Length: 492
Image (cartoon, rainbow, N blue to C red; front, side, top):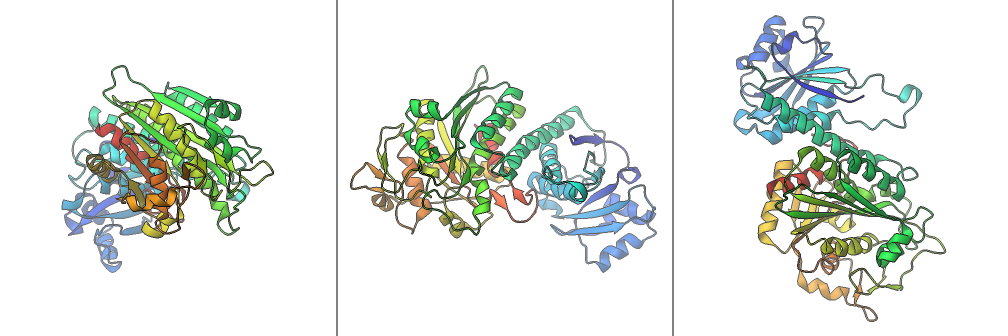
């Protein structure tokens, strides 16, 4: 069932939604109009209960209150958003997500925003509501199937009637988040279902809905195109590789950006097989491609005046008699020869051919996303991604986009001295270097295939999959980077 998000006028307290969520800023609760009105209905007991629970409207505080029939809603949830001066679009996106998650096992939610604090952030609120309501329940049966799912969210902004512009912004935010939810779905799918061919099918669905051009190459097409590295990675699996190219092209685009995603729908490590613990999480090794998939759906909703190319190199990395080996040497679409050192460093190989293809589209900027290295997770943890670029102004632009999206990225250095590690004795390049600085040497390898085009590499190995829900992030696949990429496109 599609989630309906609507702006409502009138009194939130009178809503007959299953759950009434009220945003509270830090400070005297009795001076906040909706809470003061609720306290009157509760005979003074609400504020007393809040004091006893030490609820003061601090950021991330949540207080769940039974209503005992005193208002139409069955549950009342107070949500802290922090100091009023700090309430902004990002914090409203987060608190809206928390509200929707709190009501995710109910049919309807009424959300009362802070007094005079929306600041026109209805798009971000729409994003947050849909993000928070997200659940992946496709494979539950019987008693595990949800009894209810959130179907309607009514948003109350306080004083004044909703405007057409506010409704449009809310609808756009919801549409963007729905598109990125498709990225979350893709990461959450089991690898026996989301094969490279199925990933291509999902891209076709996004392209069809967004009226975008799409080209998909099968295994033979990849070989014929000269993408020898991509072909090598996928040659050991019965689930054959796919190369996917989507194009959003407005009539008078002012710029052209290519986004490239690593699409390893499962990574066993190949002949250099991974240890069993944690291997199941390798279904998320297509997190970069999921970000590109989500971006292209979001671009179709946002309709920026920028030409956007979404490029995905999809494959399974499996051990087999036909699998590629350490010591093999392959050519590439770029023309460079590459010596294989470790078959578990396959992502940079499929990306190398995809980046060379992206360069041929003559973009103004190339951005790639990949769950590329464990080294990045060691460096930055599971909630922050690394990004690399040699262009300082582009780095600032990307930083702003990530901040606007509420996603955590940190710029890492391209240390030239580590490039020596990539010199092979028998080919142009080795595809891995030493263990130390592994995320950096991976980025340096990718840089070999972008030529002179301004470029950003995003190593999203940590945040692509979350082990718990927090803010706008669900447990499981997150769709991380897609919203940052959209903000980057819109900032051009």
